[in-house]
Image 1: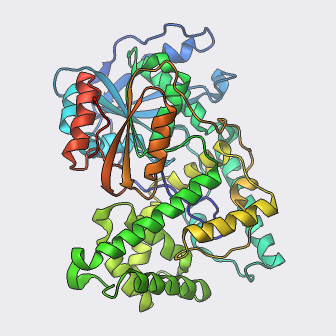
Image 2: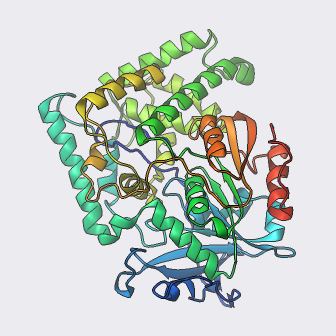
Image 3: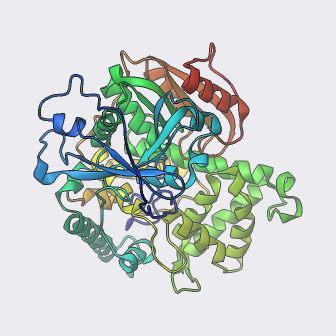
Length: 512
């Protein structure tokens, strides 16, 4: 799950993690799966569940396909159908079935994950045993997409700074207009499907995809926000659950504010863990040799400095504390990226913006030529605005600001308590699902993987979800970074692989 950044009230919901796109160039040869599984499907949904998917060879050894889904699952109509894009790598050995994979976001491309880098998606054991399938959820990438701004407009939306003093009436009018304009552009350029870019609709899409490829049960690996899709699938279709693993799990029972609050604590913890490890891990390359507290004070000073006086980068964009925060967060997603922080902070002290914009651009999916490689930001906002209700009570918002400041005193920025202006002014409001604990009653055993040092999906969320789902088993990874499977930890990988390939559930919850 992407961190709910708030670089200003202008962009209240932040972005999705960027994945590089690569086109699917169709070649010769086609293959069809076994017949669709249509048991128990209603007559009005039968045309969708019974469609035959035709896979066409494309590059990277993958196969590609496009299928249709109803825009509105409650009122299906051929006139408003949407398309879903899929990519598949066939099993290299004896096939046990299909394994659907989602990388998270929301807004990240499952198509690209599987098409471009299946080795990153799953390890060799699962590639031998399953057809590995990734798809772009509705609103994302090659599926019927959310479309809002062109590249120049998106640059202005993300990096343009208000001209009026923060907190003034003119400032509030300015940032509110920006939020309204963005939402209206999304509506005008996307159309009525914008109302249905929600997680519950994606869950129904996934069940349809399971049926179309001929699987009686769903095998699924969901990373980060992909665990949301998986947990709601378990809740809505328990009898169709095969083997499901949720890595980087989220807690469905908490509000969007609580999501942001826990993430804020998680990134503060990750920053402190980096600062504690830095001298031993990086030696003389560590820019912080005087202890964690001194380092935190230095970073706090950088935030205040760049909030007061942004600095222009090489391309003219202004680096403020929001850009610094996005860059730092990007580097904290993985311990392997911590070395970027060794450059980020010294450069910021010198007024140099190179590493900050490099990391922020990677986070936003922005290429060096100023183009955006995907629509992940726009999809992220569209999904969140219909998945969560918006808080508008000024008193509650003021209390939330106090909690956020306490959660992250190093990086907190004291903006007026105006709330999420983007979702508040979104063309369509919250449609669910209800914010409540899930049970998954009737589902077979599923696995939850959670990392103690995960800043984006903190460990407590995995613990909570494992308690809520009646058939869940928790795999704990004691380490840093966002998600754990297929990242060189043998304990985690063995437990997940044996579950998928043999149906083996750990006798006791592994502590890796």
